[in-house]
Every structure is written in C-alpha cells, then in structure tokens.
Length: 318
Image (cartoon, rainbow, N blue to C red):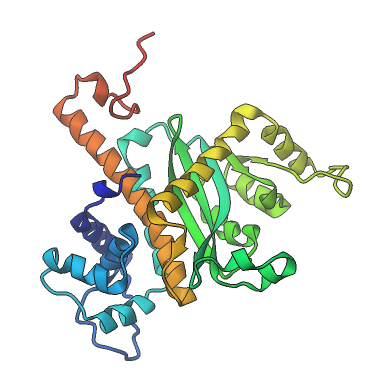
C-alpha cells in the first residue's frame, strides 16, 4: 500500500460516485445543523485524516489548499458523527466492486479469505497494565472482520468489511459478508475461529469450497459432520491454506501504514475510521490497477503491460 498514490481529489471523486450511485444522503432528515457541505467532502476529509494520521484540526488545515470551502472544526466533527458504519461499509464494498470490474481481474478471484482483527481507540496502551480476566473489562477497541479476495498469485483486496463493539465474535461479523457475496467460484479460507457449520454452508451456497480449519482436541476428536470433514480436507492442503497468510499481511500492511490505533474517543466514529482505512487500502489497489490499464493502452506491445502481471515483473516466456 502506497499512501502517496492516493490523491485527495481521487478520494473525493470516488466518494461522490459512491454516494450518487447508491443515492445515499448521510445527514439526519429530522433536523440538526444545515447541510452546507456535501457528504462526499466530509468522507474525503476523514479519509485524509486517517491516511496521514492527522488530528481533526490538522486534517482541515491540510485540506485548505485542496478544497475552496471547508467546514469549521465543530461542524466537521458533528457531520462525521452522523456517518454511520453502514455507509462506511458500503464504501468499502463499492470500491471492492470497482476493483473486480478491472481488466486485470478478467480471470476472476480464486481464493476468498475471511479473518478478524482489532484496532484500539481512546486509550493507546490500556492492555499493558492488565492481566488475565481484567483484559476482558477493557472496551477500548474496535473488532473488525473482512472478506478478502485474491487474484493472480498474491494480489489481494477487500471485498467487504464489517465492524462491531469489543469482543464481537468473528462468525457474527463474517456471516453477513459471506451471505451478501455474489455467487462465485473458488475456496473460502478461514482459521479455526470460523469453524462454524453455518459459515461453511453459507460459503457453499455462494459456490465456494470451504477450507476452514476445524477445531480439534480432546473435546473435538470425532468429526462426523460431512461438511466439516470436507472443509478440514481442504484446509489440510498446504497449497490452499497457505493463502490465508495474505490476509494477515493485509492487516499488517494497513496497521503499519495507517496505525493500529484510532485517535478517537467515540466508538461510532472509531468504527467508521477503521472501515475508511480498509477503503483506503482498496483505493491503493484500484489506483495501481488503473495505472496499469493506462500504460497498457499507451504501450500495448510492451511486456510490462501484459495482464495480469504487475509493473516491473516480466512475463515468463517458457
């Protein structure tokens, strides 16, 4: 993920396209402050704030040279609080669909990986001073789950994402992501946290072969369910299950570039910011694919422009 490849005006264009295509109006219909600034601008400022780890004031000062009119600090914070996590989830999914429409994905997605992670907010290091059951009392983190798609050998992007309060179950967050997935072909990969017959059945209903690791031990020695046995067989195949590390790398990339801590004190805004970080990752993938297509049009005979190979990687002629 290259932060410098994501330009503010491109973020604004994508936010405008998303809101207009889905006919979304974020502002509350029953009153509140006047809607003097469009919702796409508020989402753009929030994306820039997360991209560069700015405070609210710093984000507005950074945007002064980009946009002619900006809201005041209090107005920006108020309007941001009205953006629900549902709108942010839709933005991530919208960018995922735009990525899938690129020519580089003409061969389709071969692996679908689901996994969960967490982002701290409010207090930066609350868990360093707690042990055992006391950690369960800490609620200053956002639980997130994503459904990632893999195309080519290692290229990945986020198809959809979901967030919830602290300690929300992985299967609870992943269930709507798989349920709303369009029918596809490939493997659904997950770790033991997604060892659920319902998750496997939802994936199978979407046309995906389950490759979810099955819990084993003294209490789980006998696996009698045919679907779980099938999932275990696929998960035991290293060629398939090793792809799960790609989503771990995706989380690591986002947390390294955009931080694993959200400098927010309110849970609803923290959830929105976490989803916008996933959206920013998708933007970086989308910009990369768009640049490849532009070069392909300019230099269609160049080996560097041959799909689906990324720039700088030569096609194997053997």
